[in-house]
Length: 325
Image (cartoon, rainbow, N blue to C red; front, side):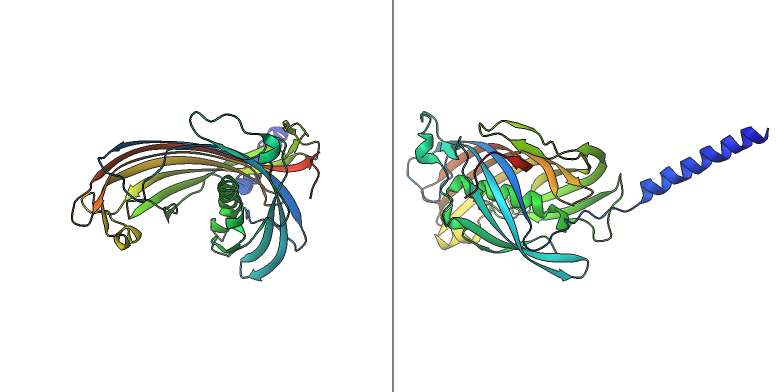
């Protein structure tokens, strides 16, 4: 009987220990130091189809496009300033040469000459700061990059800065939280806002990637890691009236817009419990827009129907055969 009671007591102790671990709050802010460097592979694909009904040519019209861009981004931490629970960092990013290049394609275009499309790393860098609230400020040098590189960098920094937007007192598995963010991309419809719902789903084994000279990706030979898996789903909501959705920049051009927009996206992020760095992140986005653009007096009406979708992936790379500039 004594032995049975001891086994029961042991099981109760294990259960209490597991419960305590599940209630433990985890802080996922990256542990960064000045001079630290790390590398990310960014892949971004988008496809935007536009149908137009008009008898005139209107300014500020959305363009149909297909983009297939990827780049290897080297990031150097320049400064870390501790301000309360979350530090502000200042960093520099630079795209490295990748054999397959970074390029944009449109319907009917042929594959470009890779040697001519390769990224020129000389003097092309982006400096930026991430504030304690997760906002990205003091961005310099972004305009000097190819448009595809700009989009790749914006995808990376959005994923990397996620940790600064998480609850300051930490999180535990199963915890959920909500946030709102205004649509950052310019659109002919005002009052667009992303309503986000996020969840700390679970902890899962994870590992950084390595990249061969031929662009093949495989698991790094480094020590295995454990990541917090975060899931974010978002819905695009419109606060403006469908009868008058004119943004301020359209008003400056004496234009008026009417219409609706909607969309949704899903982001899955793996953050290292050890380093706080994003190890892997993917995003799937789909947006629809039905809008009429006209002059302020109602003349020269143009009807646009836009269907856009995109996929992005960000991978932490710890081993690569590519030469750094």
